[in-house]
Image (cartoon, rainbow, N blue to C red; front, top):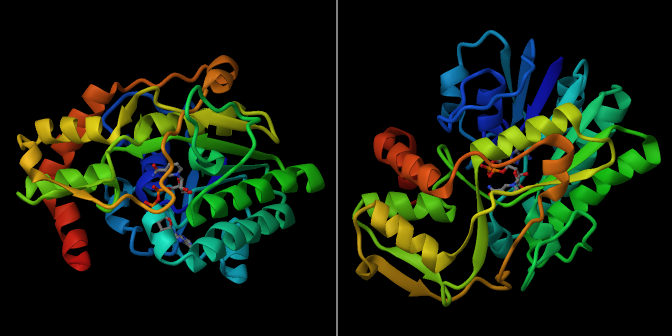
Length: 332
Ligand SMILES: NC(=O)c1ccc[n+]([C@@H]2O[C@H](COP(=O)([O-])OP(=O)(O)OC[C@H]3O[C@@H](n4cnc5c(N)ncnc54)[C@H](O)[C@@H]3O)[C@@H](O)[C@H]2O)c1
């Protein structure tokens, strides 16, 4: 089985590639049953893409890396030709950047996805896995979203992801393309670009700097270790039903204040290192996914507890300054 992984040099995509090739970056057990003969990564290497994320598998003869943009018709046509499966991670992924400027979110997340879907159709790809987010549902005060919940995205990022989800599903309904969509909660783990809250806070704290806490710190997120996310995607790729959406959650809800307390503790710092900052515009209050469907149909359950996962993650950033220091220096 030949697999094309778009965005495979990013945080989650690279974990998927390392997992496919048998080197789980999260340090936890649980890899898919199949071993693909070839994994092609298509990645534009934007600010968040990094070939260093693929260093553990760089010498694997099954890995082929193509630097290219999913918005480019010819690049995508060549990359998709001959593939059995496309697993689509490539996206502009940071909400704050979408508030500052939405254009690349629309062109990459919506038009880039459409370009890939067209190529998958032309080349008779057997399965297209579209990786998405719980943010497409907006915010939920109580309970948890099921897969049939109406979409109500609030940020340009989540609106662009919702658009791409609907396009992907439309290619199944209109053209019969074998599409499955996954929607997951907030990921954390090694190799996450240090603009997202956990690596930002950990690297700031390790450097003796302060951390910015949005608003009253009461926004609630469900945390999912990236390795569990990739196990869930692998299950969906393997056994998910065409045209279906599957939630992949971590089952651990925390307010941002509770998360901050854990990170301060793990880095040996106190609340004097926290600077309250104005809330993010349109900040969703709470996300929560119901994962009954993937649990019952595909036997998914998160395997890494937040305590273990956070401790491992903090250790990874402590031990891998060579990976994140250049990224932070480039942003300074
Ligand atoms: N990080 C999370 O917590 C989270 C949660 C839910 C869903 N997701 C989804 O998972 C996917 C991966 O997220 P991530 O956190 O790894 O993001 P990331 O920003 O770390 O990686 C994105 C990758 O896509 C590549 N890319 C961006 N634009 C491209 C383009 N036009 N052409 C080719 N490559 C391009 C980048 O170079 C990078 O390697 C995204 O689709 C995102 O919406 C992420």
